Structures are given as C-alpha cells and as structure tokens.
Amino acid sequence: MHFDDRLATVLRHRAAGERAAKTQFRQLLDLLGNRRAARDESMLAAAWLRLAALGEAIAPE
Image (cartoon, rainbow, N blue to C red; front, side, top):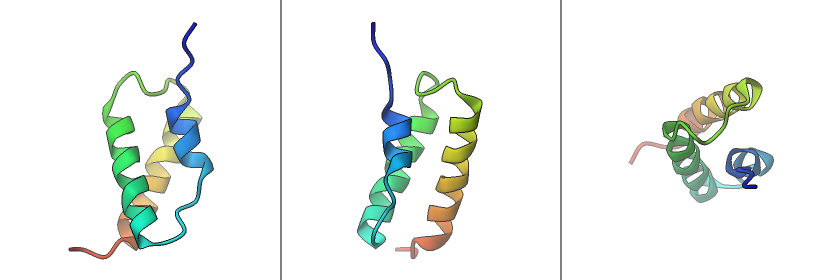
C-alpha cells in the first residue's frame, strides 16, 4: 500500500528564509497542480493558504 504524504511533509516545515520560501512555494505549486497529491480538504486548504502567504512574502525577481 502506498501512502502519499508529500503535502503534509511540505506543510510541516516552515520556510526559514527567502530561498527556502521560494523552494516551498515551488513544491506547493507542483503538489497542488497534481490531482493525486491529496484528497484531504483541510490539507488542501492549508496548502492554498500557505501558498498565498509565501507568494506575498517572496520578492519578485
């Protein structure tokens, strides 16, 4: 049996700097774009909230 906990793993860690924030942003974007990433609605909502917060915190390039 395969258990996909990638989204939970990304959400468990806080980005401690701009580079980490950019990495986590890309990870969340990738996982949220994958329909098989999670089925837990509360986990998905938390991921979208974190993605929005990271998007505001990251300086545009």
